[in-house]
Structures are given as structure tokens and as C-alpha cells.
Length: 130
Image (cartoon, rainbow, N blue to C red; front, side):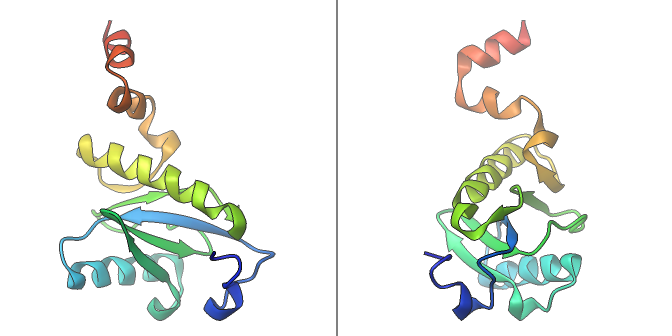
């Protein structure tokens, strides 16, 4: 859908974007996360697309932030708009892993190592701990 509506949101169908996932406990918290991300990627806050998607906040930015303070922000890979849903899924997996293991900062899937396997399969967890 976002690929179809790209011009409405000021996005280019030919560019790559990064999907981010984060959490907030309130609307004010969500706005604070959005502003922090905007500052980190040097984009005006009103140009950072965001939406509540299930329990996570989803963001679309032109590049990954290097830092967002001590808050947990999960980063998907840079992808074209028509594939960004896959990047968001990766960011959500990273976010869930980071939350369960009390991690903070900007995280990519590679940063969390085998931890996602531990979360989704107890046999894998047992094998990794042996």
C-alpha cells in the first residue's frame, strides 16, 4: 500500500527506506520517540512517517539512526518501498528480542545474535545452552 501512496507521503518509489520499530506507553511518548528518531536521522519530525502497528510503533525513514539515546529502536534493512513490510517484520522481531533481553539503543537483527531463536523455539534454546 505504501508503495502505491508514496507520492502522497513525499516518498520516492525508486529510493530505499528503513523501517524502524519502537514502543511507547502513551501518545506523548510516541511523539517523543518520533522526534528522537527525526533528530537522529536529520529529518524534520513532521516528515517521519509513523503508525501504531499492533503493539509496536512503526516508522519509515531514509536511513537508520546511529543512536536514539537510551531508548530501544529496532532497525530493519534498507529496502525499496514495495519490500518494506519485510524490513518492518525484521525490525519487530529485533524489537521483541531486545525488549525480552532488556537491551537498549539502536539494534539490528545482527546485533541480537541467536537470541530470536531462543524466543521462538525452546528446543533451540536448550541446544544453545548445552
